Length: 230
Ligand code: CTP
Ligand code: MG
Image (cartoon, rainbow, N blue to C red; front, top):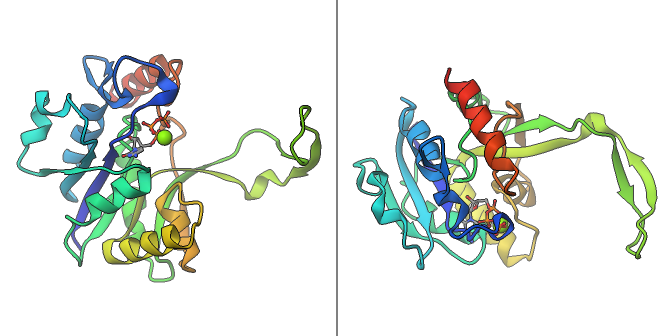
């Protein structure tokens, strides 16, 4: 099946507190968005890319990726899920959508290959890259000024959800629409698929595939990019 990448890149990067949305900050000589898009363009199994961009964006058109023959730009929405849905409207029905955050430039080709293998697994609806939780996890008791430990969660069963996340595009559109309608907490694609009862495979990915969120993530991402590409 054809695989089309969907990149939500319409956020404002509030937590980064920079002078521009974080996807346009420079990392080792080019913007975070260019690192992300160029890595996906280099993958032989990714047919094309749809990028969701904010209506207020003033940066995208200065980048050559904006006019690349395999790239389509669409207007994003208020929440990440709205941006993803907007981009999915440009993905052909019979395709698989590989949704990947603009803010994760350090993803490795090898991890994408492992994720793509879920398309051959008929026992699941799709899959996501994820990494096992490292720290001991505490559940806090009801909110007060001083949080208290209610109990310790079993770490064996906890994973960090990363991207890319891979699902048939039509299934994903229907699941996202339903989950949003039902007021579910839709912070990634898998949560929408879970909401409609779909089975999702956890594919163990490299923890270097961080989502650049805070200023301290920039030098860290630069280090991971150097490690990956050397
Ligand atoms: N995103 C999007 N549309 C939105 C919100 C987020 O396309 N309405 C994208 C971001 O551009 C980013 C990805 O979703 O590539 C993950 O979101 P996040 O890391 O939260 O980015 P921001 O929302 O931009 O950052 P913040 O939450 O700190 O404002
Ligand atoms: Mg956000």
